[in-house]
Length: 623
Image (cartoon, rainbow, N blue to C red):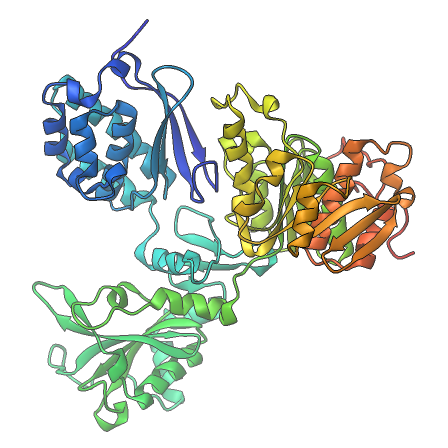
């Protein structure tokens, strides 16, 4: 039965890079029924009602690229899926979270659309999506809608789920393009991981994983703190020094990060009990800055706020009866970011630079493997190469979740959840993740960027019928998602014999290595001529080739995996894996050893305890 309504058929949470964008999104499958015959310009009063309830929609540029563009589309006529996208984004803005990316696209089913909106925080975006649906329907049906109550409810939800200001300013500085450090939220109360695996650091508000429990305890005991500071010759506040309420000195808040002064603000009294922060970072006397830094070292903290009382922060404390009033292990950053006057200080970046010095991104080698087939086998091979190179390697694939050679979870673990678990593990020094088309379409990738992406091959017909995928160009867009996330200093390993895969080469931000059985493919030869690299077979041997030379790695006959079954698919597995190992910078002799020792038969795959070896080498590693 036809309906005049907006119905959600499915709402997918794509928690990582996906078909649409690099960031998490919600993808709603929306059925608008009879409203397919009712564009916005055919509904009396609809545009006026919608713009009266949400006047800030006038700022949306839409396809015209200028403010007012979306309202113009409404007046010309557009459909509820597109309207739902913009209203959801605007409700997110009003709730206090950036709206960001949005798309609305028709599917092959009449009246069914995919509405995609960026989800900085999933619960908030879901609430905004449902509220947007109710608001749009009320505007269509000309029924009352309590806009203010909706705004208040969404702001309350945002307050519960969004990162607090201290945490968000550090995370935003970390993930910014200039630093490119990945982040994973570990809890609802502002515990965040920056970086992956063994290279990660953790923050909790303005505290880091370098903040010791003893130092916290000292900082929370004012008498003990004052006694320790005084014993080191630092001036501290004496409770009997000035009668309460008669201290005329100014109150200052200094932020010390990693032993250096990062920011300073004078806290001026404002109306009521509030304070206005005035940035005075450049005015702090070097001796006063040194005293604050020493106070933090005495307490034992790496990030701290220091309260100072002084007539003039531009003079040494000892010259003006100045004193340290307290040292805090969880300093507030907001006073340095939102000042009443003076410069806003990049305190989040200062903390990030302290945790990840020298341009460190906190990344471990991450290999993402996708394609229509053969991906699980390639994943096992690449994992073995990484192990042999000396890295404790995690693997999430169709056979399970593995840490080193032990399976810790059975079943299909080539998922966002299992991939994220690997990247959260402090023991993992390299990670290999298998990503099927369904994972890219229904979950998103577990990582923001990867060092190496492998695309084994694509058979478009295998992916039709799910997620409203019906055309080869749609399949191409799905699998290119893996290539899109390669880091600028990373590599894509692509099947040169598959035209659809080879077409992805220009999309890679890093280098490309082609692989193919046949060395004379025009696309491969052109790639070599342009300075690229390739892996192929010549004269019965595996060849690593560049424009300058061809290296004979080893004969195919010496690879146990191929003995008795050198089918094209198995050979493609070896070529792809060897190319990935080469892309990772693994030494040729290690690649050769891995190819010579990789077992033809996997070990028992039924157990899921912590002692089951999987794909053990056919000879001892220390032989």
